Amino acid sequence: EVQLVESGGGLVQPGESLRLSCAASRFTFSNYWMSWVRQGPGMGLEWVANINQDGSEKYYVDSVKGRFTISRDNAKNSVFLQMNSLRAEDTAVYYCARDHGGSLNLWGQGALVTVSS
Amino acid sequence: SYVLTQPPSVSVAPGKTATITCGGNNIGSRNVHWYQQKPGQAPVLVIYYDSDRPSGIPERISGSNSGNTATLTISRVEAGDEADYYCQVWDTNLNHLYVFGTGTKVTVL
Image (cartoon, rainbow over all chains, first blue to last red; front, side, top):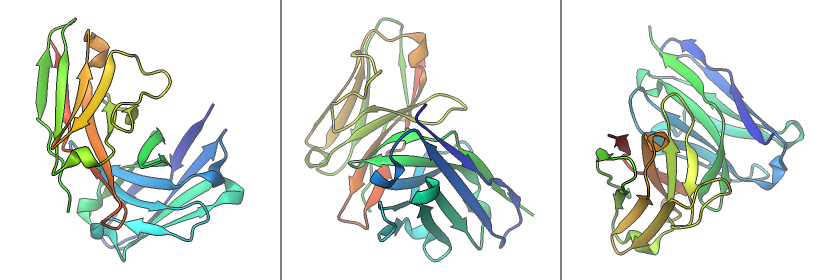
């Protein structure tokens, strides 16, 4: 089955770091841009970052620039989100998603990140 | 930044038609995509490039886009259509941002 599976979520204190991983299966991962999208409790969807096929282009929403880093390992069919200096407002379910011409046509099940003291 | 505005909620009786709007400045010049999200689940793409359906999405779900409004239409609404719906565009002019609408909760009466 074509799928994305996130891991690495958890509870951290403000100012701490966390690394999310997303493993892809049953499609040619290296052919696709990949994105991370988050959804705060009871909130809508917010795109966070994306990365092109070889990792040479990366884009971020303003609120995470300088704190979050997206990366990928095509040999391991995986995309990552390194999150530093976490804040309470970063609390959300984080989804990885496959880009398709400006849409997101495959989503993982999500990883919950809670930032709280 | 580019803003997409949706009505917070839409209520519809079974068998009727639900219409969800997505307003944005000259949105008709952009490609609009729509997602369905049921409680506790990840979003699912239901319409891309304004009106195309991914495989597995029923023909009852359709989209259009013109002027300052994109529209998602769900015909012959079923109980299983109850969900949150989000529109989305890709703003290549602004750091390749993916912009989501505010979301619409569709309630089947």
